[in-house]
Length: 139
Image (cartoon, rainbow, N blue to C red; front, side, top):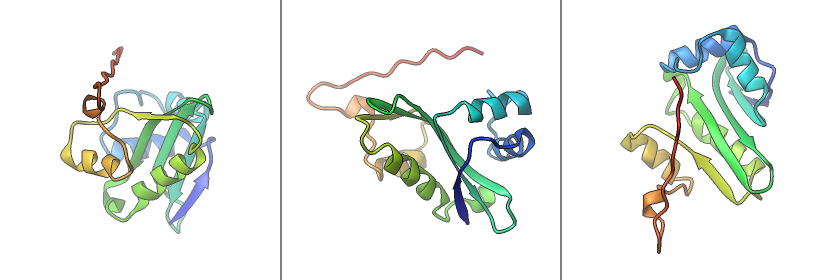
């Protein structure tokens, strides 16, 4: 497996990767998805020995106060091999100096465990005063 910093990815290979994990809400066209990835602040991809795109993490940041992890995904047949861990670690290393590292994820116990292993906490768990996150999603 090879990790690479690259933002100019082919739309069709991105669409294929996102479809492999069932993500289609904002992947309407290959061109839009390629543009979204290209406009991201930071993108790290994982490729197998044949050069096939098997994973990706991307985020947005002001490089001072916040890093927002937009996507992290790995093809199902390559999951549980440490690829997602390597992708996220690469992002967190790059933005280690940034105060807030934010993400939204599915409410799934396995995902909770994954992100919590990196030190992420749910906003409702903050002490002494819990925080709340708000999201406005357009269809």
